[in-house]
Length: 385
Ligand SMILES: Cc1ncc(COP(=O)(O)O)c(C=O)c1O
Image (spheres, rainbow, N blue to C red):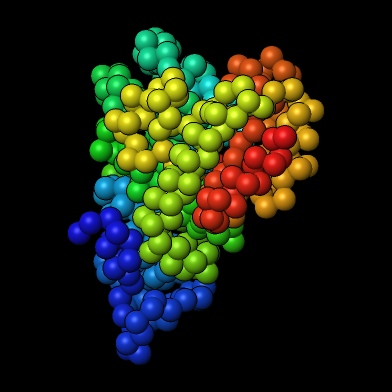
């Protein structure tokens, strides 16, 4: 089956009511026919639902769809993207282990790596995203995982997944890819050799800014370890959010195509605007990793970043002038969203620290929505004047 069909047709088993659209199984626990069935399920001699911290038909439907789309053997859904990141680390690492990560990671992932994991004696080393030899050099005996985001948030740096996966395989460490910006419609890291894919489903998987969610996709062997930890610690996704997310995926292929075509058009128009210093978009020829983006990404995705002339104040003025765009701390919505990382998400870093992760003072991140292209551009253009 093609992805468009999988996104629509993979669904939970029909109930005795023969509903066409999958119902919401909002239940904490499940009933057993008799004591013997209850015993067999608890003894894991029989498959079935026991309790919604362990499994739920809506959650399973979401996992099944994401496995098909990402070409993974198995998966586990979590309450948020950060729950997915934390659950992967906690399931696979022990005290004394080490992680190698690309430097430009999402802010909460950065704090998890640098503030919290060291409490349990799990350390990490950052590498500039494209220093492939350095990834190999800093992998030490206790390194268990290499963690990357591609495209990165908000810098849109692109890492060659296939190249890094080969390095990781040679060194016998697992490669984890946060595929939040691309989604499996645009990029399938497992096909390029990644071992684990994680998502903040809060972004494009929902696509309408309604629910939080996360997902971990990998082999059965790895997901068994994730499941063992998650069942006892409870970072599970709510059935309601799973139902929303699974419905949203039905339109994910269509949405990603339109997000990408709108974003490419906006990126091209920005390149021609004289208030703009530079524009970054994966499928623009001027992107420093354009060739890698073309190889591993079907389209360029919905995020465009650019540097406005005039630095920090010009960035804030641009946001204030926008009328259609929302100013909000999310991305991947049908509604176009603008953010100014230097004065918001990354304001606690010094200017020099921000530069290190590719965030200049005038950098604007646009999450291009599904409104009319003409209206999106009209708003951007008037705010640049
Ligand atoms: C790339 C990336 N990874 C992970 C997360 C965390 O996801 P959540 O907010 O669902 O916990 C985000 C959130 O913005 C993100 O952009």
